[in-house]
Length: 271
Image 1 (tube, rainbow, N blue to C red):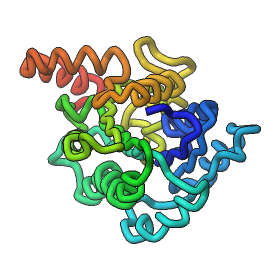
Image 2: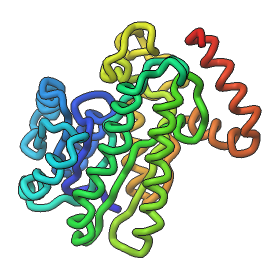
Image 3: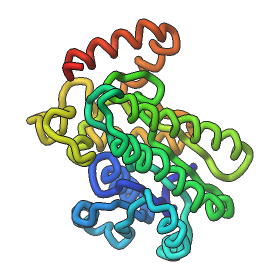
C-alpha cells in the first residue's frame, strides 16, 4: 500500500513511537488523525508538525471506551473525508513483577489498553476501510508477544492476544482491499515506562539516559522501518535486530531462548 496522500489514524500519537509515526506520515503527504488520552502530549506533537500541522488532527480520546470510539467514527471520517488506515500503536507495560504479585487492576488496565483498545478500533473502522480503494490495519504487538518475559507476563499475554487477533484478521481479509500487518518491535528508546504510569524501579526510560544505548532503536528509526514495511504489504514486521534474532532463536530453540531472556530479565529486575 502506498502511504502517500492517504488519511491514517494513529493511536497513542502523543509521544514516543506514535508521535514519530505521525510525523513520518505527515512528511509523506498524508493526513493524520492522532488519538491519545494525553492532551498536552498531542499539543506537543501538533507543534512538532510545524508547517505540516494543517494535515494533522489531534483527538483526545480514551480508546478503552468502546461506546465513545463507536460514537466518534462518523466525525473522525468526516475530518478529512475518509480514513484509509489505522495504526494501533497505543500501549502500556506493567510493573516488572511476578504474576503472583500483579494485582487485578493492573491486569485489567493492560488488557483494556493493549488488547481491547486495538479491538475496538478495528471493529469501529473496519466497515469504512472495506469501502476504500486500498486500506491498511497495522497493529503493534511486541517481541514479548512471541517470547516469554518474566515480570511482564500480563503485558506479554496482551501482546500475544494482539498478535493472534491481527494474524487471524489478516487471514480473514485476504483477497480484500485491506492489508493487515502485525508489528513486533524490539527495544525502542521511548518513555513507555513513564507513559505507563510506572516508577523508577519499573524499567528503563529514555529520559533516564544521556544517549541511546547500543542495539536500541530510536523512535524515528523504528517508525521509518514500520511504514516502509507496511508499504511493502508485509504481514509481519520485526523491528530491530533484537526482535529478528530472538524470533529465529525462539522458533528454533524455544527452551534455550526462554532461559536466556529469563535469566537476563531476572538479574536486571531482581525477580
